[in-house]
Image: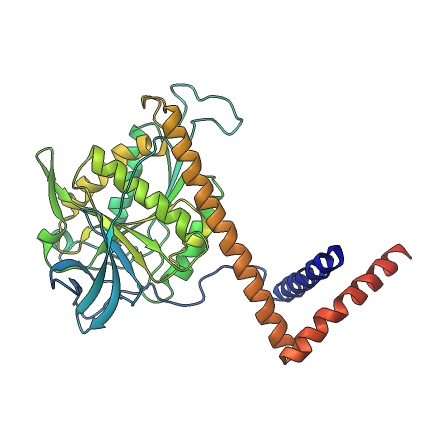
Length: 385
């Protein structure tokens, strides 16, 4: 039994070794998990999709992003649907049930980088902010839905940062431009995201707006103020998908409790959206292009003002109960385990694929694995000599 286990361990080690060796020959600036496809697209014809319950024919939702079968959406009432068929502008969905969302409490304990408890005047954590589609604008304010180099979305971005700073949270705001608004925008903004993550933020947020024509679709009123709703978007093609989805679900549960009506829902989309870089990534759609910038900034301000408490960087938040701490730990372990599992699966698949291509055939790949123990032994002997 021990010999069999050692044999399979050596085979797995061999495959991993060959995979890593192949990666070393690639451009060192290219991330292993960089997006390989461009699914993160939006319609350019001015139209949008309407989601329909395939059974009841009830209208569910709208979006201007390109929709794919398998995409999922959680509506404002937590109804959970999956896209099954697309016919022109109509997207037919299957009802999957009601999501039971919960917010387990603060997600982090406010400590400084040195590990000491933060003082009242010290920033209570960092939030990184950027925008992939920096030309996005609001027609009622600017007369155009796109302004290359100076889109209205940058003002929404800055508003979130300003409100966070007032809440004593350090906002790392990048105004890097990533035009044009095309299939490669997320590849360009990836460098910005990587740079922002060097600051070790609690979360990283990519700020957008939708392209649905009806301005009332995103409008809401909270405490007498007219403002836009915000949709959360999670990419479903990366190893952090489950962790980011759990994070988005917790955010919706929190805002539903604190500011009902602000969060429009969660869209789980085909694509990466650079969310493979961090397990606490958020993509926000702040209103649509037919809302005004003022309405969008008000919605963004309410979101930002309540974000510190959700992240657990607000010293005024009540302490977690033991039960909440258990829920928090279980949720985080689930997300981390899912991320690690995806990394292992991707590594094995990539290793096998690379081995098969380099060997030229299945027979050749098997032979290379069989030869690895001998080659490994030869390398050890050379190292000792």
